[in-house]
Image (cartoon, rainbow, N blue to C red; front, top):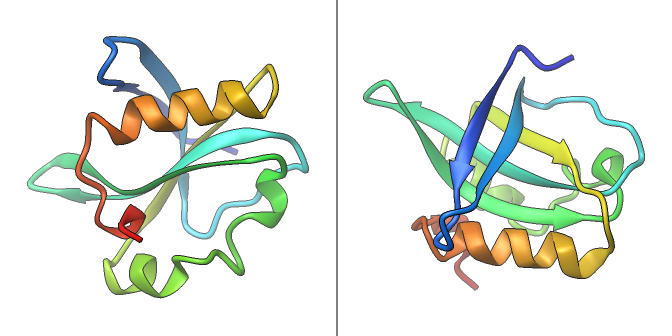
Length: 106
């Protein structure tokens, strides 16, 4: 269960409401967007922004897990996303263009 929520702004000016979960989080098998993050100087700092067709299967074997762990991530912000993969990708891109997320570097 999420403790609270936060609005993350995209470069477009759209705001996306995410629910805040302590790591490691527990999710149903539903499509959504997510942000691995931590608090620095009393502000949320995004470390990795992503999307998935199955939130329940996205975190244990995440391809950026070593970077996420080494970045001392403490929370996952997530929400279900209606629409298909392109809707999730558009949101992910909008957010990534607005934030420097070190673990999204490929």
